[in-house]
Amino acid sequence: MDTGQGMRRPLIRAAVAALLAFLPMLAQSAQASRESTLLLPLLRPGEGLAIAIGEEVRSYGDSRTEGPMGGLAKLVWMRMEGADWAAMGVEFRCKEPTASGHGKAHGRLSLGQALQADCEPAFLAWTADARLRWQRDYGDAAARLRLEEVFRPFLGRRLPAGETMPVFTASWLGAGDLLRSSPEAFLHWLLEPQQAEVVVFGKRFLAGRWVEVKELLGQDSWWFKTATASVLGDPAATSAWVAGGRGSVLLVFRMPRGNGRPDAEARLRAILGLKP
Ligand SMILES: [Zn+2]
Image (cartoon, rainbow, N blue to C red; front, side, top):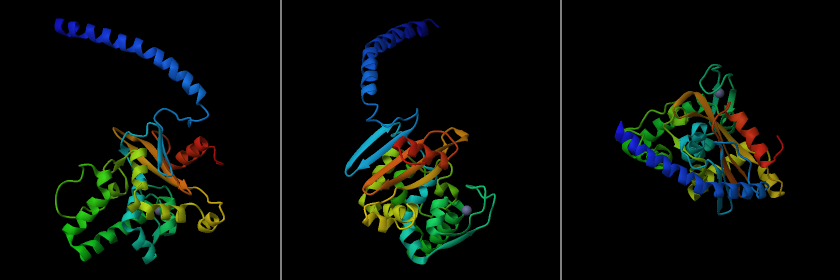
């Protein structure tokens, strides 16, 4: 008990001293933030936004904390299989009203429609097919290496060691916390040249029709991929993501809590001052 007390007092003193030293800085930064209110996005606590304008990346708010990436994992799958799926013209009939990920059946979906609707059953079916195709074409070990290479930035060390292909459960589409990222990390990933195709898919499938024509006319629209994700340590809660862009601008936004993806797009539009 005595030692505890003795240890605690200098600690408290040090904390008070640090706080006193910090107060003038706080006042200064409050003034600075008043001056720059118009230059900075107004984020709520826990929100994070990373924007790339050309080569320059700017980060605001809580944009470096890693968390479950949720449905953004579908963009990683687009990097992996998007070209093949687009070439094959994959389709899926979503008829499961209570399927995980959405409350109503989506009906017949193309690849672009499934990406937009964030239809988990569609991607579960397509990734299961892809798994069989890779095993047939490359064999288990090589297929697993390819998978690890693409998903490594989001897997950390959470994939158990081995040489066999994992079964692509919902956690490979972003459910739970197997796949994680932060707004800044995901933006850096999107900016890598290998991911150029993901951005092209985003523009083609998510910015609305005629985006390529509109781009040529200098009226390109925003594309947004919205996603719902879980929250580490709180199974009842959801967080939400938006990855998107317009022209050469790319951005990634995360909301720490909320009702998932529609909320996140509305919130991002409000932050960016775009029409709802
Ligand atoms: Zn569906």
